[in-house]
Length: 197
Image 1 (cartoon, rainbow, N blue to C red):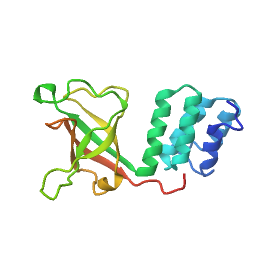
Image 2 (image 1 turned 60 degrees about the vertical axis):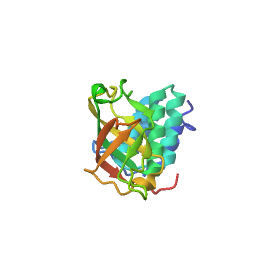
Image 3 (image 1 turned 120 degrees about the vertical axis):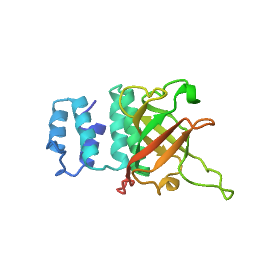
């Protein structure tokens, strides 16, 4: 990867030069690693900067491009997810799946971006029936979420405007078929990044 034209250098240039992580990492540190062709370390530092200070969708697209160039498929998927979150907002929850014996799913949900289930988020039809909404699901961490277990997840709604009423503490229900597959409690809601992509 040519350091001068790399997506990593372009992403570093999108960050304000004076931002720092809680550990004091900043753009100069990224540039130093790039100068020594330490691309994976530069990628990790840029991700930390993006975690510490919300970045526009274009920043995350550049990180995804760099990860693909380094054959880091899971990382590329993660940065694509973050790009989508920068556009539509962050919604994190603690999801508990029903046990198989209680009518829950039979297979674990793999970690990462794997499902697009329907959710009861409190919307109703004119007749009072639940109006389900679709959101992609990312299971955080490296372990699959097994039936009967709980784990932190991130949700990416198909129609983010339907989800804007949710706040931390709200309960929502996951549906793949009837009956519900699990319940989740919202733990974090952040608006979209308004900077241009």
